[in-house]
Image 1 (spheres, rainbow, N blue to C red):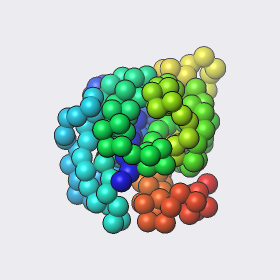
Image 2: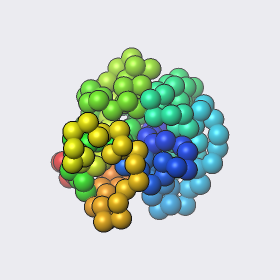
Image 3: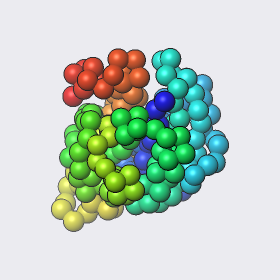
Image 4: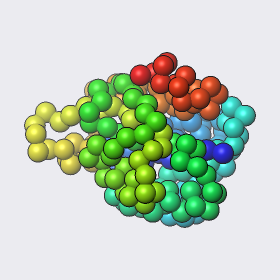
Length: 185
């Protein structure tokens, strides 16, 4: 069984922000497989589904980003999943918009949601998909960049990344992470 976690901020005001790429990917995957994510449990919204013959739980933590690890740890402990069965999808400023990077493990790279998950799980050895959002024009503007509304002209490029991340999840479920890394990195 896989826990597939998309990171984002739950409030409606953050819906159109770069920080919600993880939520958007989970929503796109759920839509493709006709899954409604509406069960409230362990500080998150979730739903169990069978995707590509794999049992998965799609999860959107409903805490603030920097507390995402609380939700992930509760799910991981309750379902007794191994670290290889946790897949986190999130935005990354160090990846170009429209691109994704898949890793088996790694540091948080400055992402507060990932810092929280790593701290709560006590390891950074779990797979993740980083969706590129690029960097702001001006240094020091990172917070406004990730939680500010996305300009209309940038949406198509970011949607490309979301689509690739959804496809990468499917590839991981079908053929494993190595195959997905070879195909998408």
